[in-house]
Length: 271
Image 1 (cartoon, rainbow, N blue to C red):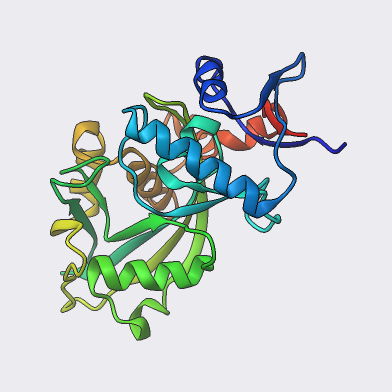
Image 2: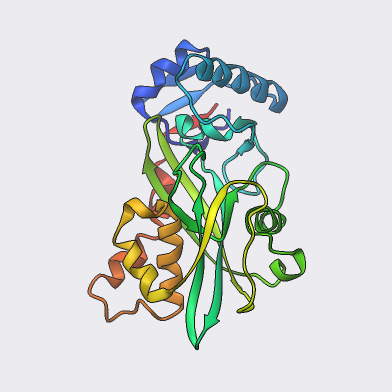
């Protein structure tokens, strides 16, 4: 039997997942899920388990967004899992982030969106002009076009000019487990006259700020969504605002992708 590393299960989650019917076995090497050996059956089982957990108050923010449970982005998925449940299994969640850049009076500005107060995660915090998770069945770039239209009213003809520039990854402890995510980052230079308009009710307002002011915001983590901050820091390197002259330059750059250092340490596997 092939064992394929797939996620990071927090030890304290194992009893609860077993209680709800997930066949987990603890071994010296880690945790093995004795799955049902079928994509559809696995997906149905996970949906039933996490639906019951949500009903019992152990899972908040249900979004009805299926994410692939796979070893990497282009690997065949073993199952689909509700986005809100990803941290329970420490599965990698992919997303896109768009830096909306423009020039005003010869200075680089960046558009930020303030998340709506009713968002299930990080309400009222600042985010990129457009960002979102990558549900199953849509490509990275098509998802960028979709989120750009829904969140900022950026027409496809303009959004298609976005350039893929980097990825950022992170490991983040949550109340229910571990987020081990990767974001695909894009830059889009917008006309000075362009003003974003939210279409889906998820953004309360947009701010167009000079980079120097955004750097100040980064020192106030309560104001900005943590992964949006990482994407902005990555852009500061590319735009020349953060260079090797900074005493923490090496530390900062090496920690924009800490997940890469742990790819051989996944402890949850398939059997």
